[in-house]
Length: 321
Ligand SMILES: [Zn+2]
Image (tube, rainbow, N blue to C red; front, side):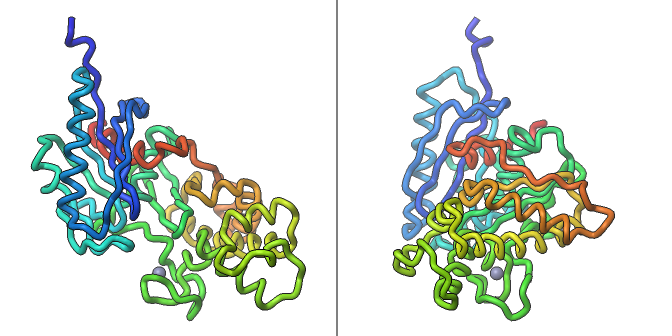
C-alpha cells in the first residue's frame, strides 16, 4: 500500500544574515534533506521567499512520499504572534509578513520566532532538554540570544519579544551596544564581547601573549580560545572575565524563572571547559542560596550542522503535539 509509505515532515527554515538554510525534518528530529541559499539581505525580502518556496517545492516533489505538516521559520527579530520579521539587525528589511509570503505557495500551518527561541524548542524536542519543563537556552555567537521555557512552554511575552538576555543591562554606563544603549550583557558575553575584552587587555597590559603576533582586527574568539587552551595567561584572563560577567547575568536569570538547566548553544561553546568550568563556578558563587546546586549548565544536544533547521521545525512539531 502506497499510503503506509507516507512520512510526515516539517519544513524548518533558518534565515541568517548571509545564508538561509532549510530542511525537511521528521517528528523524531531527523533532518532528511537540507539545503542552503544566499539570503541576499540587500534585496527585497519577497525575492528570498520566492526562491525559498521554489527550492522547498522541488525538494518535496523529489520525495512524493513526504507530506508537509507545516513550516517553522527562525529569524532575527521575528515576532511569533504577528508572523513577521521586524527591523532585523544585519538585514535591510524593515517589515516582512512571513506568513503572507509563504502562504502564496504553501497551504500549511506556519510559525515564526527568533532564532534563540527556535533553538530552545529544538532542544526541548530533540536535544539536551528532552523531558524538561523549565530551562533556559542561551545562544552564544556574534551576539547573545536566549529562550526561556517555563512550565513546559516557551515564554513569548506580551508582544512576542520575550527572552532577550543579551540586552539585559549588566554594567551601568558600560560598553556601547548595537542596540544603542550601554552595558548590555552581549557586549561582554559573546564572540564579539570576548574580542573586545581581549583587545583592551592587549592594549592596557604588558603581559606576554601569543595573541600579540596578530593585528588587532585578526584577534578572533577562535584564536583567543586556542591561546587559552595553550595556557596563555592573558587569553585565560579574558575568558575568566567573560565567564564572570556571564555568570552574574545567569544568576539574575535564574532568579526570574528557576530553570533546572541552562543549555548553551552556538560557536563559542566550542571552547568547552574554558567556558563551562568558570561560568559554573561563578554561577554557584552568585546564585541566591535557595537555587545553589540545583541548576545544571549543559552543552547543546543538537547536532551542530542542522541545529537551526531542527529548531525551526520544532516550532511546528511542538504545536502539533
Ligand atoms: Zn543592547
